[in-house]
Every structure is written in C-alpha cells, then in structure tokens.
Length: 413
Image 1: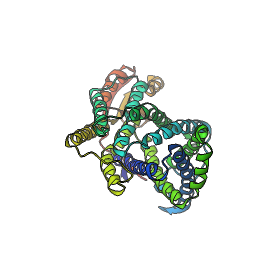
Image 2: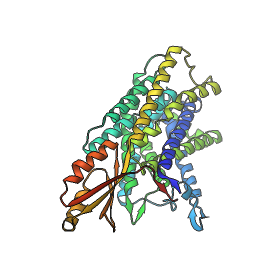
Image 3: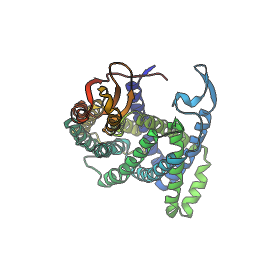
Image 4: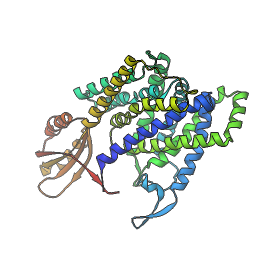
C-alpha cells in the first residue's frame, strides 16, 4: 500500500531526473559523436524505437507477483498486460501524439546542438505555462493569485537561468518556446486524453503508450527529414547505424528517455497536466551541475563556463524563483470528497447536474446518512469553496452538504 500523493510526486520528480540525463547525453552526442542534428535525430529515434521494442518484449515476460501471473512490466505500471496494438480513439490520439512529438523532437535536437543542459532544461519547461492556460480554458475559470504568482516565478526564473555568458540567445528561445514547447503541450494533452480512456474495461498503460507514440513519432520524423537527407547524410547514417559505439550510446540514451516518458505518462494519469509539468521542472536545478559535469568530463566538447560571480548569482536567483514557483503550484492542488443528502424526488436531475460541474471526478450513490459521495479535483482550496457555494448549492433538492478535503490517499498495488 502506497500513498497516492507520494507515488505522484515520485513519478513526476524522477521523470525530471531522467530527462536531465538524456538531455546531457544528447548535448554530448550532438557535439562529439554526430554533430549533424538531422542525422542524429534519425539515428536516435530509429535505434530508440528498436531498443524500446526490446524493452517492451522483456517487460512482457510473465512472472508470479503476489501469487498471480503477471508480466514484469507490472512493476512499472500495474495496468500493463503485455504489448498490444492500439485501436479506436486510442489509436487516433496516439497518431496525433506521434505527429506533434516529431516536430517537437527535431526542434529539440536543433536547439541542443548549439546549447547546453543549463539552458535547454529551463526552456523545455515552458509548456507548464501553456498547459496551465489550457486548464483555465477547459475549466472556464480565471487563475487564482497563487497560480499567477507561480507562473511569473517560473517564467522569470527560467529566463534568468538561461543566461549564457551574460546574454540570452534569442534563436534558441524562439525555437524552444514557440515550436518545441507548443508541440510538447499538444503531446501532453493527447497523453492526458489517453490516460482517461477506458476501452473494454481496461485503461491504457504508460509502457504501450510510450512505445506506440514513439513508433508514430519515428515514422513522422523520418518523412519530415526526407528533404534534408542527401546522399552524404544517407551514407553517414548507414555507416553509423551499425557502429557498436553509436548503437550502445543511443540504447543507453533512449533507456533514460524511456523511463522518463513512462513515469511522465503515469503521472499524467494521477494529476493535472500543468501540475505534473511544474514538478518535472525540478530538472532545471540539475541543469547547472550537469553542465559543469559535462565540461569536467569532456572539456574539448562542451563550451567553457563563465565564472563571472554576478552571472552565477543571477543563475542561482533564477533557480530559486523556479523552485518556489514549482512548489507553490504543485502544493496548491486540492482533492476533496463532498457528501450530499438530497430530496428523493430530485435524485435523477441532481445526478446529471453534478456531473456537469467542473472539477468533479466521480459520483457514487451510497447507503447511510448521505445519498451521494462526490470526488473533486480542484486547483486550489479557494476553488473548492467556490464550487460548493456557487455550483452545488444552486442545485434544487440538495438538503445537506459536507465537505471533506483529502489530506492523504493510499493505493494498493
């Protein structure tokens, strides 16, 4: 039995940690092994797809867990039952996720080719702001004061951390903020939808979602790269694809990416998109030490770091702003149970109206002193109060309301 909140934070935090490692490896690979971002992205995704399939086949091997025969992948995701082909709505969303991810991926590799982790990791996290705006639009609501403060804190902090040699690179910022983050926001939205779909009584698992989104990403990216793959680049790809060093490098690199995305997708099934991305943004803090590590281990590959005291004070202040914004945003989300006693003659009408209220996750009819138990997931405690007062109390036939904020949840795995 494990706390749901602990599991959620664990998944989101370690998704950010593994993201930091594969960004560092990409920065090294693009500078030392394959300096051409088009060749690099082609090799990375195709070798990554092959290794991801091998991971999935290994994780599909049955084993005995708690007296039941389950695949090894159960330890990564309890909903995993082996490799399966997506169908229906799931297939549509995965196709969309793969398409937008291919655009995000190629822009990411181009940006990494002339930057370092301390710059890339902050810029990759601007999708948090876009996702928070989407949450506002979906819920037809305005942001609270703490949410506005969190957005401003993360935004300002990210810009400060990206300072490289005392200046901000506008080309990198445009590529990452507009194209890469925009497409990653769409990818996250598709994945959130996929986590909410239940077909034939079974939910989608993160392992299959990662593999199939990568499958369509690789196909889409290959089509996009065709105009850029001239004879010289094709020859380089053919030569490097069968190189043991290159194949091993990408296998390890995509292993980190596999773990990062599996944890990220699972976290999306347990919380709001903007909250998940805010917690994953903790990897911004890792960007600076990882850049130092890169310079220390490969001084001829990574650009030398400025040791200007004023510049590093700005970077540290920026990091503090990001951490404060992340913590404020991630801790603001509230879940609660609402107990309702109703008039029997309004029972059917009340149920329909409750389901239409934003933030309602589920409704259960119960026996005893109360008639319905409503589960809410709201961005802030103030929103919970507003929903109770402004929405539920408007419904005719409700005799009594009791609100029970959730302090901690547990889940049996």
